[in-house]
Each structure stands twice: as C-alpha cells, then as structure tokens.
Amino acid sequence: MAHTTPLVTALGGNDTIARKVAMVLSGSLLVAAAAQVSVPMFPVPMTLQTLAIMLIGLTYGARLAGATLVAYLGQGAMGFPVFAGGAFGLAPLMGPTAGFLFGFVAMAFVMGWLVERGLSKGFGLFAAALLATAVLFVPGVLWLFAATPLDLQGAFMAAAAPFLLGEVVKAAVAALIVTGAFAALKSRLG
Image (cartoon, rainbow, N blue to C red; front, side, top):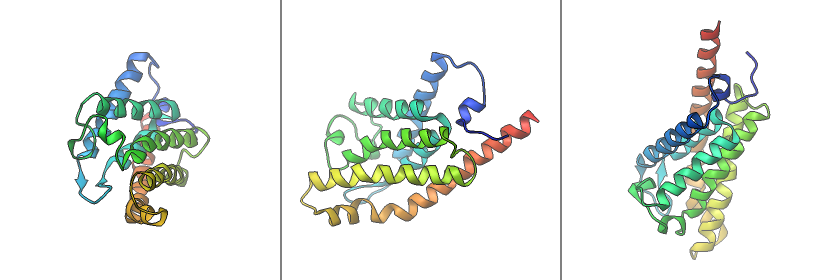
C-alpha cells in the first residue's frame, strides 16, 4: 500500500468533528503525559514531549497535528498542569523555554505537512521527523537567546546541542512505530 496520507486518514472511518475533537484531546493528553517524563536540565529539561509530538505529526497530518499542539498550549495557559514538571499558566509561555512550547506547534504542523507531501513511509517518516525537529530548535534557541543573557552560541549550547542525539533516536523510534502501524494496517486489510 503506497501512502501519501497520514495514518489516521488511511485508517478510514468517519471524518466527523467528534472524531477530530477526540483525536486532538487524546493527542494533547499524550503530550502532557510525555512532558512529565523529564530529566531536569537547566534551562531546558529533557522530556519525551518531542517523541509524542513526532507520533502525532507523523500520524495526524498538518492541520490536526497543529491543532493538537495549540490545544495543548491552551490547556496549559488555562491552568492545567500539562507542561514539564507539572507547570501551568502563562509563566511558562513567557519564560526562557517558551520558544520550544510555541515551536511544538510548528514542529507538529511541518511534520504533518511533510507526510502529506509524500514523506510518509520508511526513511521518509524519519526525514520528516528530523526536518520538523530542526524547525523546533529555531524558535527554542532564539527565544532563549532573547530572554536570557546568553549569547547565540551559548543559547545553542544550552538549548539544542545536548538534545540533538536524543532527537535523532526519537525520530527513528517514531518512524519505526508509524511504519509498523502502516504494516499492521496493510496486513489487516489484506
């Protein structure tokens, strides 16, 4: 089965508003849970959020993935403890790591967009995850640079360099999971 559609589209079913709302809610809860799996680092903690976002971006498509991360940010802004370490409110959305939080939306959207444009199987999924992750680091590093006394190199060394290898591993894991899901769907459909 050649596919240039996100996994949720390939699964079929009713494309109703209720289904989309359920997907956005479940995806935002997945990101919130992944945020709590955290290794404290300063100023940016290492979490499993980007793995969860990769799975969402690679399976939901651009608009639904972007909407899921907007919902996640909205939940945090409204006071739900969804950010890393159980943080919530507007402070995380204005603090030194806010560039990453807003970058999550771009990351998910770009990943879904790349999948919809043909990077939807095998190495293409891995490439989509890596390219979109690179998009995440731009606002993350630039915001940290603007919000702290760090120079641009210092911001990169604090907010990107320690995470690069982990992001490559997460991209590979996400691509393998989604590839496996497509293979399971193919075998199920015969």
